Length: 125
Image (cartoon, rainbow, N blue to C red; front, side, top):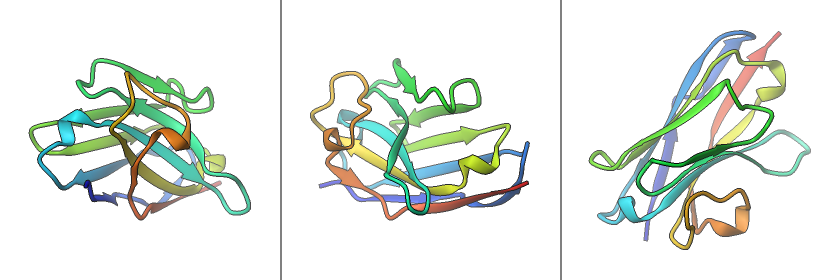
């Protein structure tokens, strides 16, 4: 069992930056691939980025590539999402997720077993 708690969301102007963090409970964090997803009002939850168990492999959605960076610290049981050059269309609730069956990185929601409660990110124009 893994429990995930996101933090760091808030209101930011377009062009600004935010850093989201996800703290995981449990001693097996380092065996889970991690992902970030987001859901805007009226839209499906979508993949943002993922990172492998070692942190050596990452994958990003085209819409955030070059602007967002995922890192993890297995010693601290945390995964972070650094977001730069934010746009109003990045406004959404952001969720972190843990997948115990993932080899490398995964983009599909069904690949992830545990989810956090989400943190709101609002980007004003």
